[in-house]
Length: 226
Ligand SMILES: [Zn+2]
View (cartoon, rainbow, N blue to C red):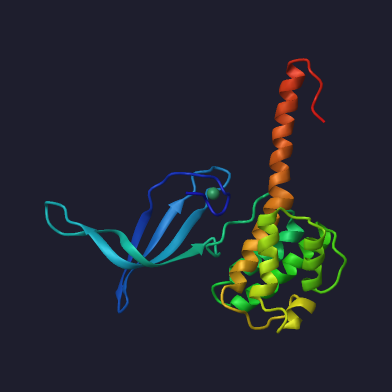
């Protein structure tokens, strides 16, 4: 699994702590200590479902874990089940996104307000669209063919699924908290993540690969690539 604090991949068995049983079923804490020495934080889930016990030959029974889980809530770090922000994304783009992820389970409309504002910020700062309503900014970005087709399609879907035509406030005051359509808040986050990849993660990856190739060319006494 990937540690949601530091994003380092690790393999570890969960430590379980049984809390007991209530009307809905068994509850337990599922805990992983992150083995990365720079991190070293606990990853903690609150889990509800069916308790599984081991029954040693000597008698008695010991709680092992909960399986299957009906509910598995990430308690530490507090967050959603969305992927964490890639480290390549500069902080002034991550605040609204992180907030949108955090409030998603409790309030999709608050989440959508934050993700619309985040999207608008990316379009203005990175795509260089003329500040206008979000719908017009999306239109400008699409007209100028700024995105590969898979991103253009999902960006366009924001206006459709959000029914911008019927709710002009969404487009004019992006941070306003107003009702959302089913799936809208999640789609907004999907689109922001796709744009993070497009503008920050992929270029960093390409730059890294290019540097590695140039190093090899240099070692071989050849001129670097352009
Ligand atoms: Zn960690």
